[in-house]
Length: 275
View 1 (cartoon, one colour):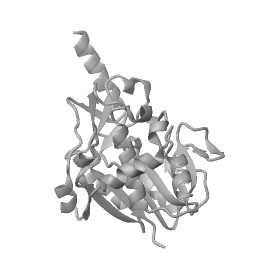
View 2 (tube, helix red, strand yellow; view 1 turned 60 degrees about the horizontal axis):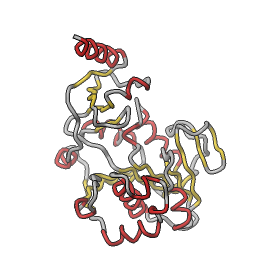
View 3 (cartoon, one colour; view 1 turned 45 degrees about the vertical axis):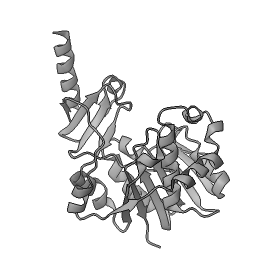
């Protein structure tokens, strides 16, 4: 009886916030055929495993507390995300880079040292405004001038943007990027059916608001309080249709198993502002 009462209370909670509870766990799925059917081009991308290993050594992750000096189960996946974003962006010395939703990531420091970039970290958890090299507040409404950045990066963060923040961020990127500027966001979390996934207990600590009718999976083995999984129609509606003059390239990583570890990177998106 107690379990049934808790389940009913959970359903009422999400219904009051627009969501609809679905039983089970949502898995990260390959939707390439569906993306192509929606009119999108999906380009294959093969990781140069030797170059990735050299990057990890040069970046010095083994000396950093970040992901327990590489001992954490998902450390290799995180390093791979950093490497692929840099490979796709091809940064040049002196360019301005903002690592969006960076939290405690050393990526801004690493890229400043290795590539000679002028780097900033942005996160909702930072105090609002600009403090040195930190930008606080909503990533979809950054307190910076138009055409401020050459490069924007997002590593395992876009899927956590609640409500309409994902669509608003795409429009904000058009404002923030310089002509010829580029945004790389990865991974793109995908499933055959659009849904949100939340942790079975952590959602109680967050006042999450969902779009009306969002299916919400409540799972014990999912960490964050909010994770958005796109199907092809929702990706078109929430991202592609918000691009305006921006250009999108989608990449499908073809050899992630060759990288080893617990890597799961499947899709990366590269958005460019015309020069």
